[in-house]
Image (cartoon, rainbow, N blue to C red):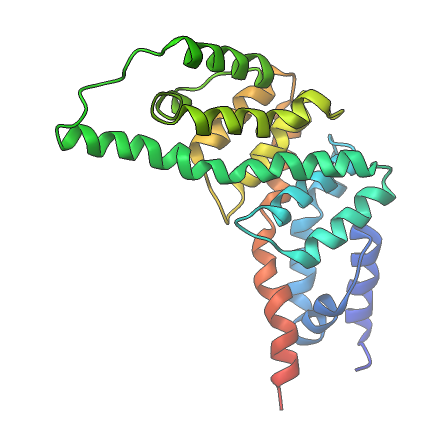
Length: 249
């Protein structure tokens, strides 16, 4: 359809600010231009206010939110990988973002093992934490050295599933041993997928915010991370609006 003057203005501004356009936005613009304008203003905050993260790092945050196992929004992954490359990111840097984001699955154990231990205590099968043996103490020290922190939610996993802990230690340490992203940026990646609406893993959000602050991240930088992931709700419309447009008689 031919766009009205208002619709064309919104489209031009969207492309100027966000650097992208596609069928979902076109269909949404045709159906409700005021909504597209409001979303543009919402999503543009980390791009048009006093920016604190370099553009490629912003794109890393989008990639982490979209590629996380809890979301897997392929159109967004493709868009933001392309944008990151355009902003000068290397394939190795983007792969590092994906490696960091691939650790999300361990939250099954971070949440599940403490609950298992509670059940065992309630059933009279456990009286409290057991002392760590030599191997477990070594693994704890290695994790702390590789990852730069320790948190109590690892204690139970290390105690009852040391093989799982050791394998995860190797898996999660790869980007910390071979990657080139600044440590505070790595922590921002964790914040991004933990804070996303599709995950909301509160212990991880707080842990990685604390780690990032201790590594030098500013309030403004971390707020920008949260601003970026706060817009993932739009995928309800980018996915469904084209379907609506298709089915309208």
